[in-house]
Length: 518
Image (tube, rainbow, N blue to C red; front, side, top):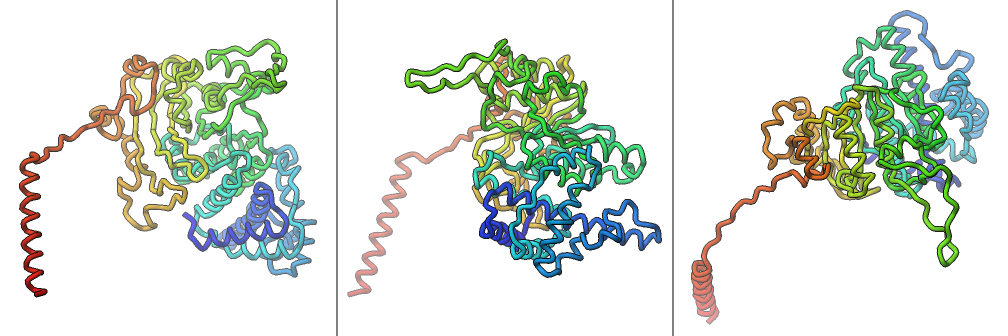
């Protein structure tokens, strides 16, 4: 987690951009991302040099040649501000745009990148501030991006907001990526799910990833992400490269659009992790037909002519909710046997429209719905107070849902107000009352024991037949039993007797006080 000191440093950097004339929040984040990327490239080179000195071997795949030494952060950061500005603008920035082959996804996204820092004094100020941030801790870079993205949300830009990293890590741990998996996020943003998957694999398969066959798969085609925001694609691609992925497959794609109907991705990935956008609806005329079919609908053969109301204003076009469409998309993207962990608004679990019911039926009847984890409504504050849940399912296309595991998460280790302060300080013992995530992971890994639990507990199984009887409703409150404890109260006569005795005692003490005053 970020310390108050680092947050203050980032706030100062942010303020410097605004006062320096760069006011668009996304532009600010992009410019900071470029500088963080440039700094990190130099850190990676320094690590390679230290390793080469220890092994007495040549540097493996150096980022900078000796002739490019002046492009390194550690070299230019102390130069005169104008010299630094000219160097970064004219040489360093063009250099990072050509780090990979021109046909790579990274180069395609960086092609339109623009260096927007308007003056030397601002660049020097920001470079010195960034240089002062301690990035030694493994999670600091991710936490910095989280904090920057929180500023996007507070500015109300594009409705974008981050998924908390501890929720991402929990979801990745539950799907347990392996060395042979192919992992996709169809709404990737800054690639938080993909980066957490990278970290999980490095932690659990460190030795295996040194082997050539696993290393090649890991660096080239294991991770894929789609987004239609060019800013997010650039940031996501840089993030993946900073996490050691040589050629991240981060692509521009409007995942729900019919534009890709002739080149549909289907049965392509063994794992999908996502927090799709769920703040709006999508024009039905632009959607891929198979996604509409998954909701029990068909698209008109041709777009309907615009209709006007009596005041001459356009009548709202027919739309579908993006969260339902993304669930249909994720089912399509998965290979048979593939597994998914997806965040959805709670309305998906109990919505009464035909489309809501249809997608739940497809998850339960046609696939294998494994779990529904209900999260507290404060998880996405301060950006949104909507209640959300995590759906975990396996693609089978032949059914297989016998029973569904429900967990009622009450706490995630952070306050559930707009501040979202950590409840457990670093080094302190995590208690279940403050953080349910360790318990969720433990129970998930021992699901056989969950069959014995009653509906009054925090987690339990519900048979498929009962879910079907309840109209495919997946809200946990439909099945959870509330235990009422009977309270026994004294009779009114006994209470009145005690009150009278108390009154007598007060009167006696008042008389004593009166005598003392006389």
